[in-house]
Image 1 (cartoon, rainbow, N blue to C red):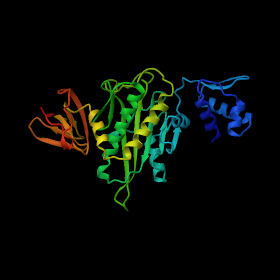
Image 2: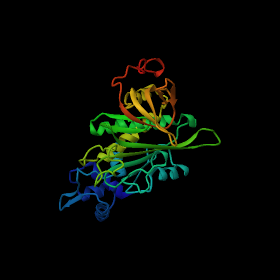
Image 3: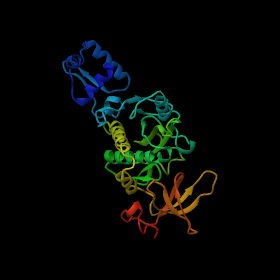
Image 4: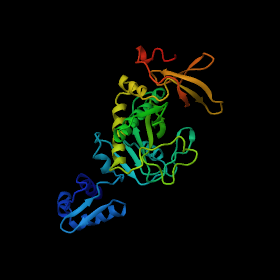
Length: 341
């Protein structure tokens, strides 16, 4: 689409003027066609200035989402990036595309969701202007029992991306929440479809929502004490840079989901190991436990007050208070000797 090509040229020279003649020559179109596409981009909210005898200039401080804006920061140039102002749910759109054969690495990105979904059937708060919502289609050849590794891969990719754009340390609360300063800034929902023919995963959709700024009017009362955001300021191309870093991280990690480096990175960022926690399960009373370590399959190893222990492969936990602030190094097999006190 020529309109996207115009935007890509303006992004490359962000903050500087590009003459209409230069754009027209680059795209082999007329200057009137360039003017028409610039007007369409303005109508979509892009802050483009035009000055006689100087040309067009895109405001370098914009934080608008666009496919060209994401691609210019993306290492995996083969990824198909599809950007929307708003969708019902990026996961729902991605699943429809995946069922139609969309390729590994296809990403659905939106500035808001009208029916965003979180884990355990919860709704996901997704207002316009304050977040990044994306879902990436992945087609790894693995059995469904190993699909948890993709969730953990997504958590690592998101944590590293958040850290890269903010300069602040990001942690992971098992199994898939990303925290800054103890507040949840990102949630992840992975959904998979299995091939009955092969018995392997046909596709996985990794859905990721990130609070880039506090929403206008603040978070809803039920989220106020637990939700956070990357910052209050609008930073240039923040969401495009963040989306590109997450997509790159996901595609890097999915190339080797059994990697020791991926496991070690997930464990290093854990916000629960060595902590007293509450194990939460639908229909059951919360149960106190001490988070000891991670199994190599990303299960959470816990010990209960009665001395019994368990490996949690799914579910949810809540951190009660710090018990051990320093974890010993990984021992053989990925276990931390002495972490149980």
